[in-house]
Length: 238
Image (cartoon, rainbow, N blue to C red; front, side, top):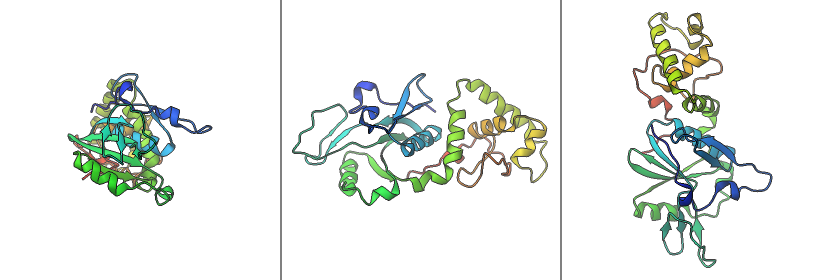
């Protein structure tokens, strides 16, 4: 999977500069372009970005990718001078998923009803320009938060050959496991068990339910994934 952000000159606004005083920007790796650092304005955006990085169908991530003039209907991917007579909207993200562009608004559910933005107008305007629009809230990802954060660290690990090696070692052990075995049972052959289990999940050796299973407890059943990575899709776009 190749994940990248837009080039700095294409970003309308630097997210860190928009951060309110006392509200730190979150910085993270994109896992696709070496030392490229992504910036997020909130913990919720940070969680969403991590979920996007490990999502197997997401090929590109663009942060604050455009400026939408809601008055004229114009969309600009470059920094522009804002006209005080017009209303504007700057989306949080744009994801490329299976060749299709999805514009994403990330907002806490409690704040969603308080927003004065006309999201239906935004959706129709983007649709007219060949883009789909979706709003994601904390209700969509909160129950998978711990798992997403753990798997993200393995996804951006600097030594991916080592991650692959751990997954291969896990593959060799799977046939030895008795029926009904759970993740922690693997510690009989491999330790620390979390290294090998998480690597196996990332590389498609074993299945995992992002919302139901618990990587901290390691008490979930073991089932071969045979290379299928769909269990890493914490978000579904249709």
